[in-house]
Image 1 (tube, one colour):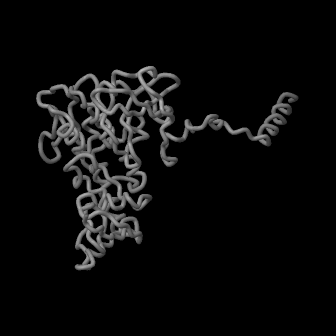
Image 2 (cartoon, one colour):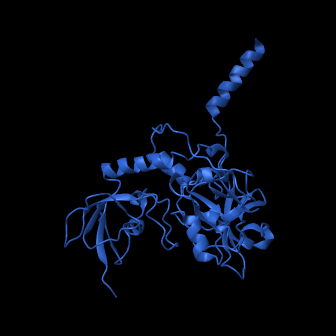
Image 3 (cartoon, helix red, strand yellow):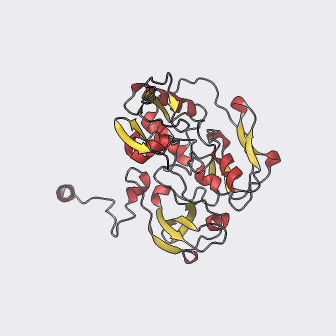
Length: 334
C-alpha cells in the first residue's frame, strides 16, 4: 500500500492517496475551501478541465521542488504532491480569475431564471451570486440556436448550455448507444443529435441530473412547480435495471418528479433508469425512507419540510396586532 501524501489547502493540511486531484483533496476537508466545479463529475471518467471555475494557486509545488507553479491550475485535473501548498479562497488572484470565468460563462447564458425549471438547483446561479459581477462588458449579440426535438422526456435548451460535456460523458459511459454529442466548432458548438434523432435508452434521463444548468430538463416536470415549494423524500424500490434508490419530489400527495440522490457536491450517488424516473410516480410504487436532508444554505430548505410542524409563514406580532386593533377602532369611530 502506497504512503499517503500531505497537501495543505488554505492553511489546512490533509493526507490523501497519491494521484488524488487537488479538488478531491479539498472535498475531503470540506467547507468553503472546496473549489466550485461545473464540468467535473467524479463518477464520469475524463470529465473536468473545461469550465475553469475550479482554478487554484499552487504556491508550493512539493517538498522536493518547492517552486510555485507559474500559473493558476485547474484543481480537478491537477494531482497533489507531498508537501504541496494550495491557495483557493485565500488568494485574491484566484478570486479575481474566478470572477472572470463566471463572466465568460454568462456571456451567452440567458437571464431566464424566473421561467427556468433548474432555478433553485442551478450551480451557475450559485456561482454567479458568489463570484459574479454587476454587469457584463460583452456588447455583442448573444448566440441563439434553433429548437430541436430530442424526445418526449427530455427538453433541450441549447441557449443555456455552457458546454460542460457532462451529458455526453454520461451517455458514453452508462448507455450502450449514444446518439448525441457536440456538433460544430468554436462559438457555433452545440449539444445536439444527428438529424434530430430522439434520445431514448434505459438511462437517458441521467443527462438531466448531471446538467449543472437548465439546458437539459425533465419534460414531465416542466413548468409544474418551483422546486422550493416541493418536499424531497428518499425512497427505493426493487428495480431489475438499476439500484432503485431515488429522491421523490412531492407537492401535497402528488409526486411531481423523480431524481437520483445527489451528494453535497451535486453529484448523483447512483444513476437511475428511465422506468424509475418517468414511469413510477405513485407513492405505492415506492418504499418511503423519510425526508431528504437538504443543506440549510439551499433555497429548497426554506419551507422547513423536515419539521413535523413547519414554522408559520406569517409570524404573529402581539404589539403590531394590538396597534392595528386600536387603529381600526379609531377609524371606525371617525
